[in-house]
Length: 99
Image (cartoon, rainbow, N blue to C red):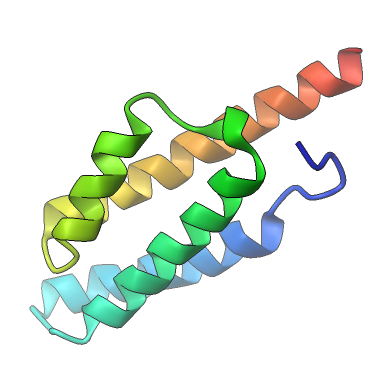
């Protein structure tokens, strides 16, 4: 883990994307694909840098998201993976401080 990198900029960007995606899914707007792809890239950047931060069943869930970018269920899954990853990173930081 990179202790100095808390990935706050990535999570902040996801918060913005998430709000935009909620709106686009409500409007059934196909412009959401690019935003979903950006969210996928953000999550992948975090997990690649901190492998211990992978949530349970990450690979299967991430694969589902990639294959179903226009699907609301994939968006919800991506949002959950961001939340779970953020929690795991926080736990890892605490563990590193305790050492």
